[in-house]
Length: 285
Image (cartoon, rainbow, N blue to C red):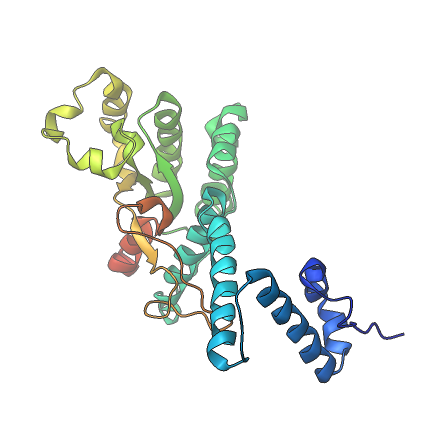
């Protein structure tokens, strides 16, 4: 039995009915229009404004109000740190794929492993050669007849100079050296014991800055032979322009993403490692 939407019961309090795509698709066009007008009239009534006639200007005004409300709700989702991390990963991967010439016998493989999981895998392995990364990159490919050695690894990881991250880099470098496989990561403000890139830029003597006690383990790692297989890049690069009619238009509604110049954390950033791979192309393969 078809579910029809009655304009008599449909108002702002019944907004969930608009989320039922099946019900809306089954309702006649005239009934959908009547339901929409019911919502429109209710909005006018709640606004308290005096309306002498219904014209396009009035309708456009209320559509703009709805677009604004939806935009702010969408901003809250898209500017959430966890959502930004996911979008950054996929946009970086798309940029890499779009700029790779696969006619040149190049393959792109994805290893879905979080940074903490990779660290835990190294810690749980009795020996380095029993770690997951070693098996994936060396045992299964480089050391196997007919295998396909991996040219480079472009990670989405951001490292700092903490003992945990330096230990992780040391383990990665050993695997990379065994498989002759450069590993590219990134650093952010935390690597410099800062919270923002503006604070990093304000460091006056960056050469002597690493003489601090916090970088003893980092400097020790850099002096190892295997460290030459590790590349760390900075700063982040803009993953996309903010959504808006003059930047990245959205067809379904007038979405204007609220991002202001100084508020850098609301922009969508990606790792510069992707650009490094694109720039050097086959030299990193």
